[in-house]
Image (cartoon, rainbow, N blue to C red; front, top):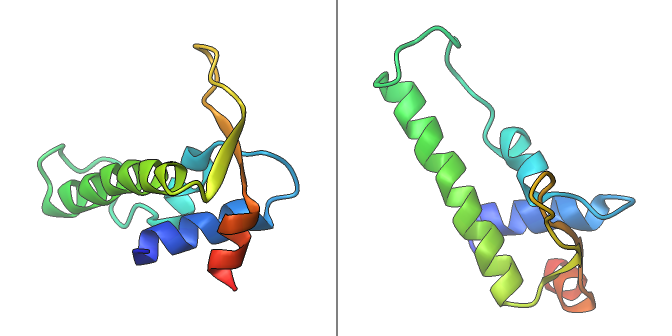
Length: 92
């Protein structure tokens, strides 16, 4: 499990209700640049790449059955997930 996958799974497991995995993306990799910097600013580009990597981490957790979808996305809201018993065991 990658560090991003582990941290995302940890935050999901600690949540007291089902959550959208993307709710934690800014917690894991907060923006470290001024919001006024151009789109091609190196710091913004690195941050964007890390955010996209978290989508990959989300998919990996789901494919490994470490999280399960409790409430599917409905076009307005993303999937809400919770850690599975296997996910909790993977953190131990």
